[in-house]
Picture: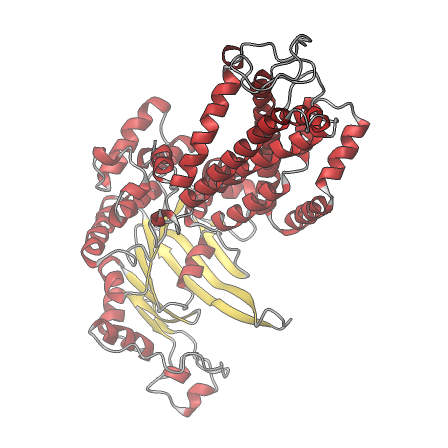
Length: 308
Length: 277
């Protein structure tokens, strides 16, 4: 065991111009003080509706976006003050799988070459052994040899996502960040891809950060879950704890929505009052909620940011 | 070939090719197609009207106009391809740097492009040729150096959209070198609009060369070029119509061929128009 990834106080803000003619800028807190740790071989699920900052968080961890504040410690190295050269070495240890398999593969690179390129670039295998390794990787993600010399546009979404997963596995990473990896696939394919993730989880020591808006997908694969709302963590803990005993009204609503409930977004655009970010939408709100931002409280098993 | 198959289906592009392919054949096999020497005067047959032995007639020095037009196609082809080749190379390099690095570099390069676009190109070419000696190589270089701006802008715009695509992010996450990301993952996907602009550009370059040669500062006689055949023709237009008609038609059809092919390629590469033809 041991920590692979530890994130503390991560913040990322974007400035959005209000209109083309004004100088006024609106600051959007995409990620607002997120902290968590991820143990080796564990899978952490990050859940939240769209706009909750989960994808930004995923991209910040891989330094594809530069975080504004906070520390990211990956394999004992703090990524905040890292040099270009050190980062280059670390890159292959953390990989990302994107949501849309239609844009995550270079349309001009054949399947075999998409996997072979990182293998050869990082010298994972010698030239003469590379072919065997690539074949092995592609077979392990369920791509048969008939597809090795096809272009991405000749394959289905599910197959492309398999290739994208294979590409991430090719460099033997310690961490894979999967950013909504099944959201753009249809339901029957989703199940297959989730099974593939389960296989990877069982057969390797790779830690995973599994980002999704669908709590139902995340709970199958995660050991722990973080629920995010408007850039903040509102509830975190062991998967069973969060899923079967949700405390935060937002988590409760997400779980209701799986069972066919209505995802109530009324009040989502309301201005922040300095109190709980969920206050305008909460069905259990009380007057104290609008004045005080609740802290994340609880033990390692289950933490929640709600006054009640 | 997927591209050829699509061109065959597209009537405009196909019309362009049908015009251009005989032109290529003429240029390649000029010595076998024309039976007269294009530069040697034959004073016994001056200004002969079109006949079986001189299908396009002869000029004031008795040279066969058909041979001169056929050899002239070599010049046009050479000027078209080389000058556009130069423009494409400069355009791709400058556009790629501008688009990929962005920020101040992009701003500086784009203002320079704006500056270049403000020059009246044709007069710039006239000035440069007046300073240097008029030769076909100088013409090609100058045309190339004054027509890369559109291509640079196009490449920049393509790269701006491609560099935020997820496969480029994935390549970054892989830790690939910038060189590899630019040349393997970004540029190859940005090139398809270049075929269109380059094809249209060849037509433009041929026109520019003809104009320069017509004004006497392009290809120098006795080397035949469509432009300088026309120069000679203008003095005899009342007595020898064939002298201006045939090289004029040659320019017209060649430029039209490139424009049709270019328009066709634009339709073929644009996915929104793909299924209309």
